[in-house]
Length: 348
Image (cartoon, rainbow, N blue to C red; front, top):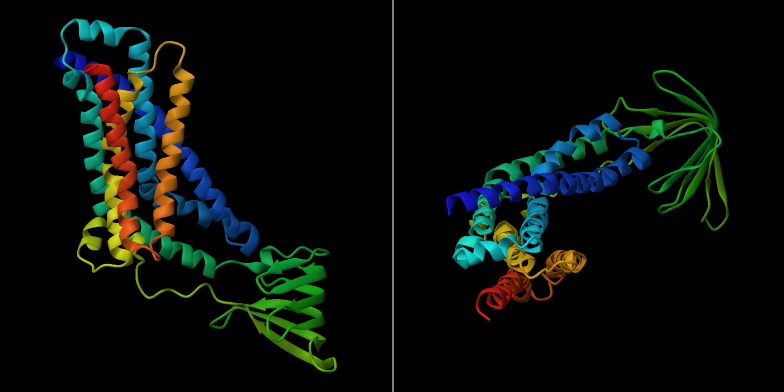
């Protein structure tokens, strides 16, 4: 049955490639929209943001592969079932195992590929991505966001000006500056600029007054020069997060968050195999005219799979053992449903 196996694999790989392009594009677009927040809210350079998107791709592939495989097998076997090809193949004496083997082979191969990705490829890419993201945040330019006549909110500060004198260091005219932290205060100044020569960037103000707004009596102080240090980026945790590490590294670490992340990544690694088993058996049950029902059911299972993983992460602190069981629950459900569909098709 090598000809049949190669035929099924060829059709499934074509559909899988198209689905990977679609789902990977959606995932990258979603991540890119999240990163653009740094451009819109913190003045990070757009080209720097675009340059690190590729570093996120190995992590996105871990989610795109199971999705793409599910749809590829569903459509491939579904078309064969609707065109009565499966009936003809079974009438020729082909065993159920041989009929399902192309999907199982593809699922097993992609499971191996995901293991390699999560063990050696994705972890260094994730660490580099986080490092580059911190550097981009540190280099964000608030002055790129300041527009005369508009109020800019940047963390705990608000800033507006009436005009700007362009140059290597732009100088802003007629300043209103408000700090909403503790204690809150306001600054009205003739001019301001951002000094980046020191260890941390600072707002420099010239010729104005500071007004403390929550003093027992309003306290106003005239000044010729004043400064406000911009907040630094979020401090590093001092080491890689468990979610950024690889499977082999997590295996060697003690329990807690590392143990949960290990099981979560292993469940995702085996997801292509279980998705292949489930999709192949389900698609053979889809009769002519019921393709929409099959798509809706598959989309529901896909959504449920990742919702259960999200719930497992949310319950990790309260019930660690239950969370470990929950991350494997979607795969067990797919295995059980696939076996049930198999019995319906080939036994009853």
